[in-house]
Image 1 (cartoon, rainbow, N blue to C red):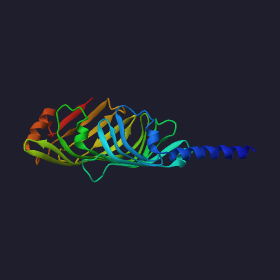
Image 2 (cartoon, helix red, strand yellow):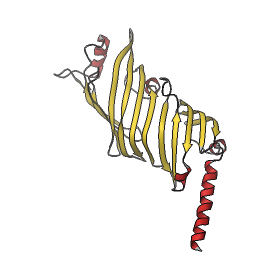
Image 3 (tube, rainbow, N blue to C red):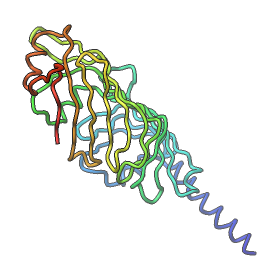
Image 4 (tube, rainbow, N blue to C red):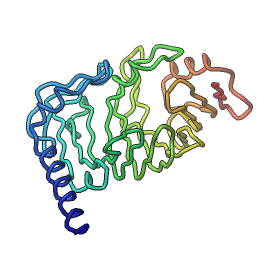
Amino acid sequence: MKLKVTWVIGGVIAFLLFAIAYMPAVHVLGRINLPSNVAVANISGTLFSGKAQTIVVDGLPINNVKWELNPLYMLLGKINVNVKGGNIRDKNDIAFEGPITTGLFSQTRVKTEDFTLYLPVDRVIAKVRLPLPVNAGGRFKLQLNELAFGPTCLTLSGKGDWLNATVAGTQGPIDFGTYSATLRCEGDDFGIVVKEPNLLGLSMDVIVAPDMKKIKVSGKFKPDSSLPNEVHQASRLFGTPNASGYIPIDIK
C-alpha cells in the first residue's frame, strides 16, 4: 500500500514538473519580478525550449537568447538548462553557450562546465571605472572548464583571452596583439593571472571580490620597443621603470 502511495505521489510530482516545463514561457516569465537592471523582450516557446529576442543586463543587450531545459533534473530539485545567446562570429555581439545548473527552490549556487562567453571590449570598458580614459577594442573570450559559485567562488578553472586587442592612439588604433589569462579561486574571491609573452610585457595577478567592489592587482609591464612612442610615454604615467625597465603595478 505504501509503495502504491509513493508511486502515486511521485507520478503527480512528475506530472506537475513536466507541465510547468512545457508551459508557455511568456506566461511564467511575465509574472516574475526581475531585478531592476534586467529586461526581457519578445519571449516565445516554452520553459522547456524557449527564446527571448533580447535580454538587457545593466544596459548591455544580448540578442537571440535560447534555452533548453532538462525536466528530469527538476525531479532531483535542480534546474539544468543549456543556454545560447548572441552570435559568436559577430565581434560586436555579447555571445555565450553552455550548460548551467542551479537549485530549483534556491539559486544561490550556480555550476557550469565547458561554458564559453564572448564580450566586446568597448562595452565592458565603458562599465569600468579606470584611472585614465581608455578607448579599447577587440573581444574578451572566457572559457570556463568548471565553475561553482555561490555566494563565493567555490571551484574555478578556465582561461580568458583578450583577442585582437587595440587601443586608440593619436594616429589611429594601436595593435596590442592578444593576451591570455588563467582563472582560479583565491579563497572566496576570483583570481586572474596574466603572463608574458605579450607586446606590453605584462604579467600580473588580479584578485576580484565576488561583489566586484574590491580589486587587488600586483604585477609589472614593459612595452615592447615595436610599440609607438606614445605608448611608452603614456606608460610613464603609471610609474617609473625599475632597473630592468619594468613598471610595477600595485593596486589595493
